[in-house]
Image (cartoon, rainbow, N blue to C red; front, side):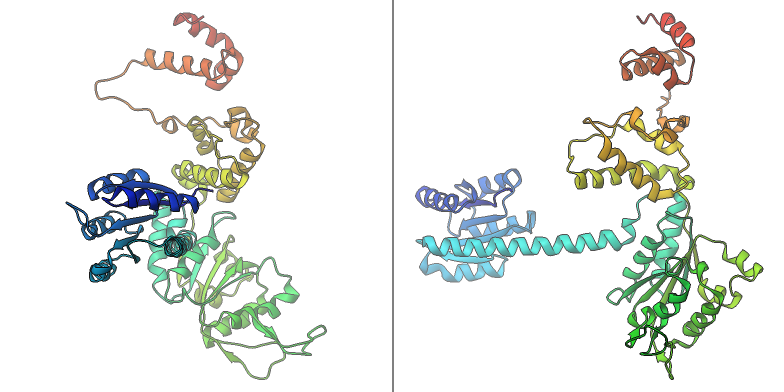
Length: 453
C-alpha cells in the first residue's frame, strides 16, 4: 500500500528539514521545496495529497501558492505555517481554501495530529467521490457500453423516457441487458432516491407469484403465518421492474392491470386495497403482440405497459460495439482474477466481431472471463479462443485497413499478410495457411513467389 505524499514548502531550510524528518518518521513520503515556483513544478511530478506551506516567503507568497494549488489540483489539501503575529493571514488562507494552520515553531505532536486529521479528511472525500462515480457508472446510461447507431437510438429514447412517469416496455433477447437499461431509467428519473424493486415473473413459481407481487394477510392460506408486504407495496414511491412479464399467468394479469389503473394493490385475504404510488418498467424477450393474438396475454394490459416501447438490439446488430465491450469485460475480469499483466491482442478482436453471439452481451462477458481464468501464459492466443469463434472468418472491414489516397500495391499487401501470418505461428506453414484460409500448397507457392524461406 502506497504511503500518503506530502510536499513541504518553506524558504527556511532548517524548518523544511525538521518537518520532513518528523513526517517521514510518522510514515509519510515527503518532498520539500524552497519557494512557490519550485512547489508548483513538483505538484504535477510528485502529486502530493497534502501541501504544507509557509505564508511568508520571498517572491510568491504562501497565499498565492495556495490559490494556484487549488486552481490546478483542487483535491489537494493545503495546511499553512504562520508566525504568531500573522494569525489574521492564516484565517484569510482558510477562507481561500486552506484546511488548517500551524503556528511556528511547530510542535511535533500538533504537526502529526493536524496532518493525520487532514489526510483522513482527504481519504474520506475521495471515497465519497469514488462511490458517487461508481453509482453513476453502474446505474447511469454511460454504464451501457457502446457507440453504435442501433444502441444510441434506443438510449436516446430511454433518456427521454427517464424524465417522465410513463410506463416503459423493454423488448430484447436474453442477455441484451434489459435490467441494466431499466435500472438506468430509474436512477435517472425523479424517483431515483426511492426503491427499485425487481420481480422476475419467469423465475418465481406461479403459485407464489401472486403473494410475491401483492402480499398476503396472516392465515389467508396454509403457511401464511404473518402479514407480508408484496413487492409492489414495498416499492411504494419508487419503480417496479417486471422482468419477463410475458411469463405472468392470465389470472394475475387482471390483478396487475387493476393495480396499474387504480394505483392500489389487493393483498391475498385482505378486505381493503392499499394505495401505492408506483412507476412500472416491464421487459420481455417474447413477442407480446403475437401472444395477444393467441390469447396468452391480455390486450388491455399490453397497451397499458407499452406506453413507451423500447427495443434493445441484439449484439449481432451492433457488432461495432464488440471490441469496446470485450476490452471493458477483459479489464474487469483481469482485476477480479488478479492478473493485471495479462494481454488481449487486438488481432483477436475481429474474431469476436465475426461471431453472432446468440447469448448476446452476457455470453461475451462469460467468454472473456473464461479466457482470463484459463489462459496459462501472459497473453491470450488464437488457439485459446472457443472453437465456435475460431471457425469464424473476420470480415474485411474488421481488419481496419487504411487505404491511402495515392493508391496501394496489392502484391505488397499480400506479401505483408503472409509474412505476418508466418510470424504469428512461428513459421508453422499448416497453421498459417489455415489462418489465411488457403491450402498449404498455395501458401508455399506464394512464399516462393515472394522469396520467403
